[in-house]
Length: 232
Image (cartoon, rainbow, N blue to C red; front, side, top):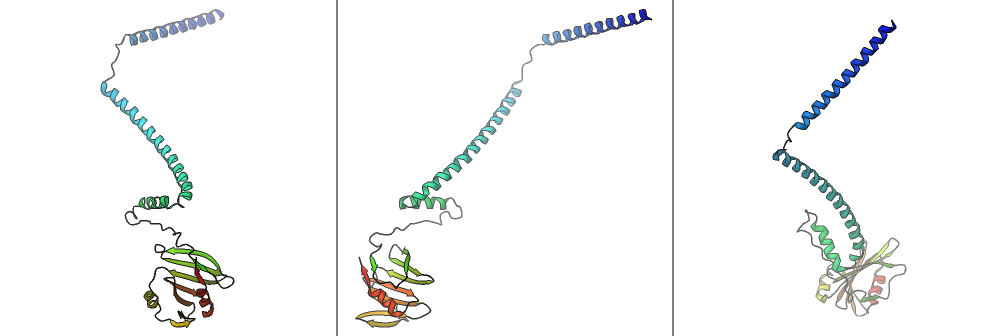
């Protein structure tokens, strides 16, 4: 039994060696055949297609990078413009180009909107001095309109208001024309026009200007205001 078993094992080992040898020999033969094959030339058409494919892929990546960079630059520009505009908007030379640039970017407003900024003329600003204003009123706003030909002084006291409107460089005839429907008052050699309503209105002409006071204050208080207007 032992002899038979030994013979079987020897036969199996021999078979394994034969298979190993045969397989190695087959592989070597195949490698030799492959090495003996002539070198294959890549067709130019195939090479061109591969080159185009790589170039297209590169361009796509470049576009992505530029788009990404463009967004960063745009964001930075908005921040810079925003910060600069805080200062620039206080200077007329910069303010008009900035505002018009913004409006031009909106296609619906293109060629329809033009911004002109009116600056207060130093010769107009504060040229009048109001020596009498009823107690408690405070001037909260001054508006310079129509190329600085009209000034509005806005006074407030709690929920009460008092507006003084000044129309500059006006003829006396214009003053008379505006008084239609008003009560004519002649006090201390001066002519006034007064309109009593839920809000009282007083017209007065002086310094080549028409003064119009609108308020809930009484007639006497409003006349006292205009009687104490001086020029600086």
